[in-house]
Length: 86
Image (cartoon, rainbow, N blue to C red; front, side, top):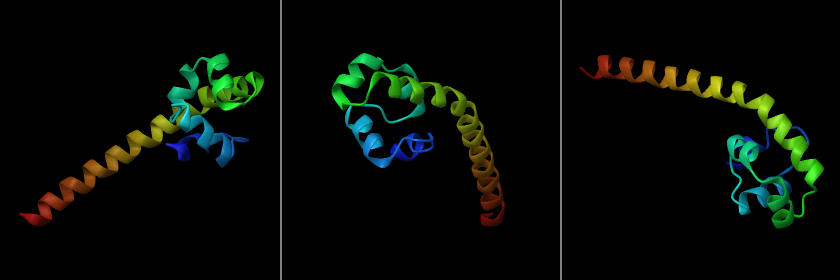
């Protein structure tokens, strides 16, 4: 999702959209991308893409932790809802 990519400082909506059109939608996609290929497809410089990759690598653990916390909250809410419904 582009909102995940937008968490990278310096990556604006236009570049996030260009990356999405090139098949890059998540931080993981960004980390695993072939920089030269995506540079050709998006017109974003190789150096800039490498900077985005480095930032994504630093950001990924934080995002993963947030997802896990959200899953925990969802699980807790589900248990509360089931108790209230019974």
